Image (cartoon, rainbow, N blue to C red):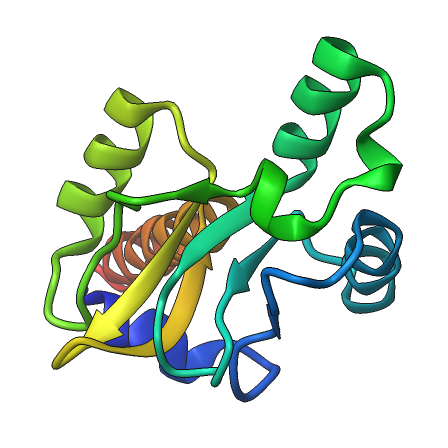
Length: 144
């Protein structure tokens, strides 16, 4: 299975983004509103500047105690953000996420933001595929 197939099956269309100048309170409200653990940081919804997660908020809160007075640009993971592509294999992306210890990966197609996947998205699809295989085997055995 490819990452593009997982994106196509996700219920919400588009990627929730936030600008680097947005405040952390605005970030927290967006995370809660969309029930997600991370947002892509972008000024235009297509260009990847970074990613900011609940983990970033907690780490900066621990570090300086005043995280809510910062903007997203001050706490995001920027620079060389780990990404994947729609053509990437699910198992390879799961391994990469585990190795990198990240829970979310922006998906770039031709250098443009096309989605975001979480480790939960990938595990769900893996479990669904295994369930389907098991059901097929059960059906084959019971007919036999």
